[in-house]
Each structure stands twice: as C-alpha cells, then as structure tokens.
Length: 106
Image (cartoon, rainbow, N blue to C red):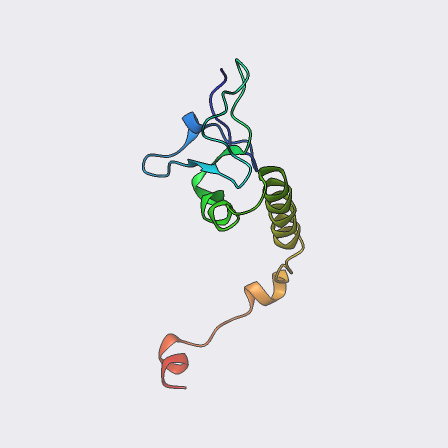
C-alpha cells in the first residue's frame, strides 16, 4: 500500500512538518466492517493534511466523494483568489513615510 497522501493537495504523510500531522476522516459512506480491496483504502475514508483536516471534519456527514470534490473546489478558489490579489505599485511601496512618532501621535 502506498503512503497516505492528502486527498486535496497530495501532500504525503511523510512530508508533514513536526507537529503538523494530518489524519484520516471517516465520511458518512464509510463502513467499518467492510474490508477494502488489497492495496487500496477503505471506501468512505480519506487522509487529509493538517491544512485541510478541519474543513474535512466539518464535512464528515457527507459522502466521501462529494466532500472531497467540494474541498477541492474550495482550495482552487482560495488559490485563484491569492493569485489575483492586487499587488502594490512600486511607487507606493517606495513613497517616503513620515517618522514613526508623527504616525503614532497622529
């Protein structure tokens, strides 16, 4: 069996930073008594990295496929928003600033 990878971003469990471990989430369609096919994971069960774990647990009442698809759409939307964020102009970044005490006292 391959090492667990995040169902959203594909981060392997082995690459997790110390203390930032993910976990398996059992969704509504998971059956604890069903044996998975050799070399595969149990249906309704998915591994998530620490960054996606909280959102996955919020959707534990969903079917696994539906939850993973919704989380991927959410992650794609966040990535697109981060890429389209406005970048400050070079002139604005280089503008002279008043001394700190003038900004402090208004």
